[in-house]
Image (cartoon, rainbow over all chains, first blue to last red; front, top):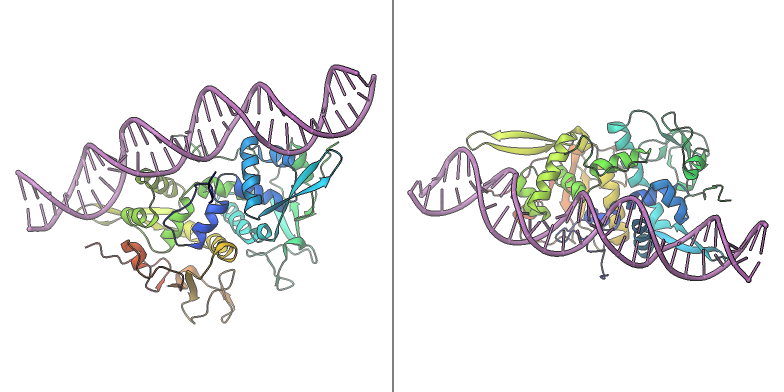
Length: 178
Length: 178
DNA sequence: TCAGGTGAGTTCAATGACTGAACCATGGTC
DNA sequence: GACCATGGTTCAGTCATTGAACTCACCTGA
């Protein structure tokens, strides 16, 4: 509709945080990015996993693609189908999402929902995504996510079910679409 | 109006990130917290610095106080005046804001707007808020914020002007309210 | 051939949130 | 008593979000 970020700009702010929030600060946006990092790639998977209205999902995927956070690409020709894959710019949001999740857990969470570990050594990630054992910041593809005790062991939607298996971040989700 | 987080809940999500976003995910909320960390405490200072509608500011201060992120307290009796001071729970959002700001700067910023340094040694903070020289994560009260070259050197509102002086985070802002 | 299904959307009316401007209430100050 | 500062509330208009229904292209099995 307009040249800029949706009319959702924080006009007077000279601030990188405000700039960032113009891009990813709208409702649902960061949850879409989170799912993309978890390996969700397809419209329908985002839809059922997030419980987001279709129109909003379409709009968010548009914006995120336009901002270079997701990349749309064809994964089959016969019935033409596209998927949305997270880019470097999207992967760079991992520390933000990690920090936000940690804050949410520490201040509002009852029980552990997920564990994040260093794939190489199995050590649980520290607050900044580092591995205490290896002494390095763990690259996103080397993070393994596994379910914690607080997670519903038998969720309704197939995406949540697929996310019960331990898996690496970014690794595409294996749902049973047919 | 209701018992929970404003009707802005992400109903089906079992996720600390979603939980966090229910609390601080609304428009303006994280910018209010940012300002609070920068030392802004008074209704009018938030108002002029953010350019936020009064009604929205009032609502956000309400919610943030209810969620324990800000604390309202009387700072003078004669004409009774309250200020909103950031709590531990609010201070705990610093890593999130730091990560978000860094992402915004690296992917959308043209020039440096602010520098954050370790007050003790003057070293610029690393990506996770750590001091490379001292080898520690810098506690929020020991972070000094100074203006960078990209910042407008003569802003219109008094709050932005007060934020041009190097100052520690959390340290209350000294504006010239008379 | 045709009925039905799937994936990925668009359209639309209803509801809710945000915006800006105007108004109100205290408690000073001159 | 008139005026100002601070910290709000109210309100009408606009914009965003929702959920349900609809579209469209392409398959698949009978």
